[in-house]
Length: 351
Image 1 (cartoon, rainbow, N blue to C red):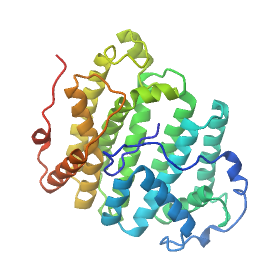
Image 2 (image 1 turned 120 degrees about the vertical axis):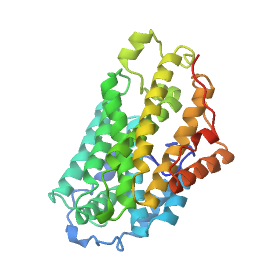
Image 3 (image 1 turned 30 degrees about the vertical axis):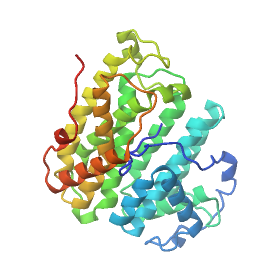
Image 4 (image 1 turned 135 degrees about the vertical axis):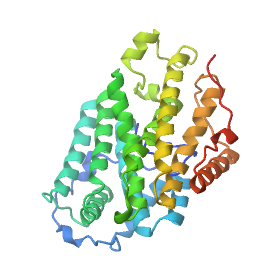
């Protein structure tokens, strides 16, 4: 269940994509050859079919994200973000939603990861007329190689998380493994937003602690999708916690898991505090606003869970008023780094 932070999706974050899931057979043309230098450094040669598809996938899942990025980023940055989003959305849906067996899913993710590695090492080239997703591979890696491979580490973190998902379906995992998975997803996406938002000569070290905001957002996402993930065979509560609290996992366990929910919310609150403090130290105003906009829906969801006295619901919806409220908080905090959140919501605690 891939959850990067997206820029302001209060907004049904990671709702299922409407595009069809491709299969391994779609990669039959992948081993064709074409020299890497055919990729333009400035993305001006990006095929229209590829860019349109990537932005369509992004718009179907994150319309507010794309709207905001088009107004704050250059065209090149929007294109790279859309390509990365579309690729990992597709790969995540393949793991989560396809009816292939687990061995096939693991093999397919491993093959995709291997292709990325070979492209980065220049040991594989892809024909320009190949499939849309192989073209995405080609263009993202070419762009990143022209920019000192600043995205490579974080792309690998995405692959690591998706491979973990493919292996853990219908299994109970340790708390340490689940926390590493959560930090990989939220942290990598936070850092990619920072990388695409700031010029090379103005990047700072604040993003290392800002990743805690991404981790916190993913922790709240886990609570939001707790019951739907169970249906798909993904258990985001550790074996240790199940044994410690004496829990049974089903669609009617909301009261039973309240102590665990409280524990996750407290962990997320602490991580939000650390992450927001780091974001407020980032020099770029545009970058601060993007990051704060991305995490504000999760802060709102966290406070809703507190107000519900830590009972989880099957569905959470965000009103248009709340969306504007979250954006207002992000804007105010960007301009003046003061804790405005208490003005917006009054949290309640577990008695």
